[in-house]
Image 1 (cartoon, one colour):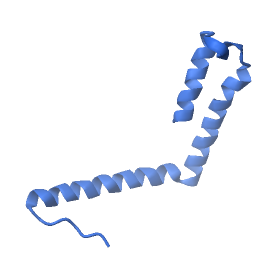
Image 2 (cartoon, rainbow, N blue to C red; image 1 turned 60 degrees about the vertical axis):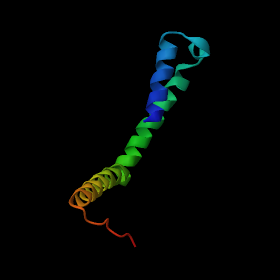
Image 3 (cartoon, rainbow, N blue to C red; image 1 turned 90 degrees about the vertical axis):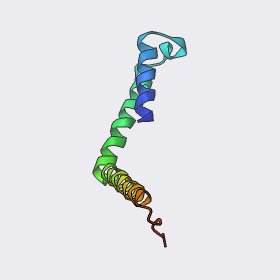
Length: 80
């Protein structure tokens, strides 16, 4: 996502002709967009995106269970 943000900033600087970016070739401005597309393609194909979503869901569930245990006055679950 940071790479996409950088690509948008470079595009804006090029379009508005601000600073040294105005003199750069358009190919240099397009490279971060291509790298972003490559990253998203790899992340989806490898399952990285889905694994991260599952990890977030599992962490939210564990936090919710821990909050409920604390509200009931039960001790925290021991971790091995």
